[in-house]
Amino acid sequence: MQVNAIAPGYFISANTAPIRADEKRNKEILDRIPAARWGHPAELMGTVVFLGSSASDYINGHVLAVDGGWLAR
Image (tube, rainbow, N blue to C red; front, side, top):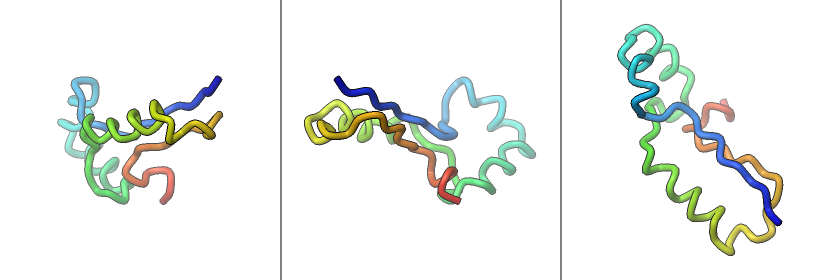
């Protein structure tokens, strides 16, 4: 059995709309993301396909960050 997870960063969604609409908070967030933008939900699909495929058969117990570089800065 495999147990892995995806840790998304800041993505465009209805839940993040108020934060994105707040100019000050939005700028603070974007200033800390090396990609300098919010993620698009479709950008998670490659990670989902990878973890659901046999390409990840020997990966277990990993949390894969999809965050525009937030954790790497």
